[in-house]
Image (cartoon, one colour):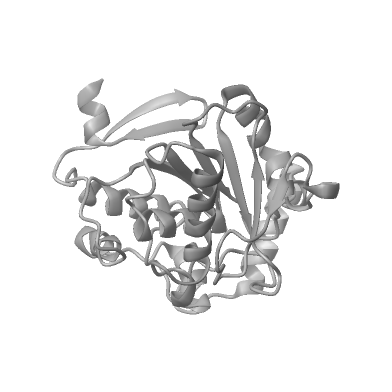
Amino acid sequence: MNPSRIDIADLVRRSQAMAQGTGFTTGSLGGAPPGDGALTEVSGFGSNPGQLRMLEFIPERLSTGAPLVVALHGCTQGAGGYDHGTGWSSLAARRGFALLLPEQRTANNANRCFNWFEPGDTRRDRGEAASIRQMVAHMITRHRLDPQRVFVTGLSAGGAMTSVMLATYPEVFAAGAILAGLPHGAAQSMPEAFEAMATGRPRPAAERAAAVREASPHRGPWPRIAIWQGDADITVRPANAAEILKQWRTLHGLDSLPEAGAPLGRAHRVELGAAQTAAR
């Protein structure tokens, strides 16, 4: 396929064919259970310029100063369905942390993807990024959470939006986990988004890091990052994980140091940054 002309329908067809072949469908995580299951919707958390829904889960007798985890769903999914499929609220109840699940609306994106590629939604204090930041601030104040232990994670479009949040508000998050996502600044339009998903759109490390530095006045320390990517992913190509790693290794000053890999078992591998390697 010519990478400069991405056929959106073809990407969708191939993704669906792979899902059917494995017995997994995006719908298994997409449809929210009645009443969003264990989640509670919150309104009045701010001006909400991105017009997102805010859903939360607060375990009973949550301790003052507890951590907060922000979990961002993928395309075609909702907060309740994502929670049901991943078990985030069950984990929050067992481990004692507050859980925030922002949810996209079809009015913003027909496929319910977070708009990680739209400039109006990916800049500090604007659009969807600002809405998620307002939700975090609201939860910290309302539930007396620890502002130093706020973490963000997301899958696919949610993973790309995780990159956005880590770049635009790096002082807010202690760490983030990006699952099948893309680096911040990978795209500025929908055509560029599909090209990035399919090719990774390789860029020099300095350019990747500059996109994050330009996203906020923050100059460090930077959040810790975990990057998760499947080698067989044909929707968000594995090259994107390499671009995310390139972006954050440079920000952490690790780009001149060697990487190391360690096998986890059949079909699994972990790539360690230099700082982690030195600690082994």
